[in-house]
Length: 253
Length: 252
Image (cartoon, rainbow over all chains, first blue to last red; front, side, top):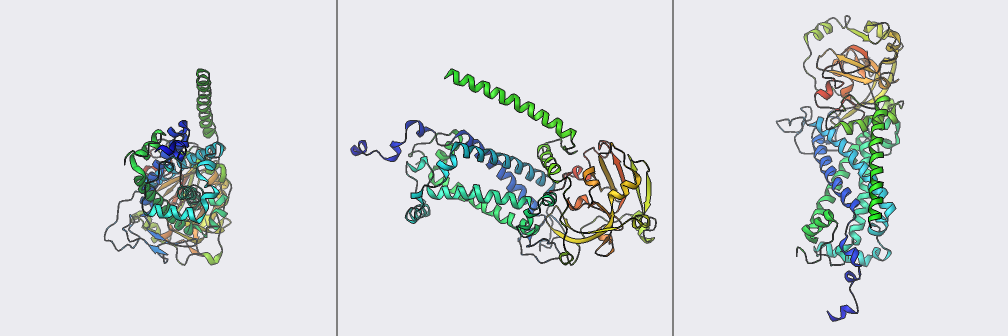
């Protein structure tokens, strides 16, 4: 330990004030609002989906046309040939109300987050990877570390590694915009004013199918995210996202 | 530090006051310009109002997408329906000769129209999509008379705000605002893909509203009434849909 006085490791090099603040207040608040909205959208989305668990490509699709694929689940409508001998109760009314209400809250929260992140430099400082991080060597090391479920070092506990940065950027700038776009493309009134919204996606039923797959990708992200938080120390990382204070690296070990 | 926190307090106070005043003004303006849906009460009110208001601002005059003849679905979907009532069967047995559409409310010349009369008006066709809230859809060619033409014949009064329309099935009634009622693609449809509108698709007369979901396109239409308030209809939520748990505005 003697030489650490001459060659401080990167964790010790972080100024004392920064050690205690891991996530800014706005990031923490928008993170948890997004979490709640996402769960609401997921539950209501599944409820809406089971009223017609068939997917198509192009403009139209219905029980009289051949689906691209059909999920092997029962349906809440008798008209859908599912192979099950029963029909689930119809939950579309409240599901649709909840889906759109949560979508509004999520959209407004996302806008607030994006504006704040642009102005405060959150995107630039915390999410865009540095040039050095984008080499194959660094990426390979990170991938191997992740596959081995290796716990991050003390320094890493205070900033995002390159895989995290790329994943968060993908979620923020690709998956969320795409899920909103494909959702709006299903609105008959919205596309009457902005027809390209739906034609660019290949039609209304294509938009619905895309919406389903992007949602699946977001669910996959959520699962991996929670597992990774678990690997890094569930209690300390969750506390950091609630209180903003970074736990020390030995916590929860 | 106390200076800073005082400044912070004052700024926050101003922001909060401006926010409350802003919300109040927004609510007032929204009411004035008809941007608040009738089912705005309750826990889903915020989302519904945001959806309806933004769609009204963006889509008041926009036209639903129309398609080419080659895009027409091979078979229009006959959706599930409750069994038809005796009164309907009687009219059907008579070839719908006695079918009447009554138009009343805030109009100068209330009246009753037979199918013959409606077919005598300039007919129009549109190839549009019918999308169900469940997720399926089909494209068909609908023929009928634009609702705006019939409203012109009866003469709607200036303070008209909503149009309420009823199926022969007493459980199915809906309403729309005047932007949708006078929209050029809102039809009283009596034809489908070049033939008489089949019973399974709402024949002999169906209101077609291609910018909203299928449940707003009420089948077996017998009455249309023009009003300035939806309070007196059913539970006052605007239509049968919100009473059954579904949104009144179905443009999304």
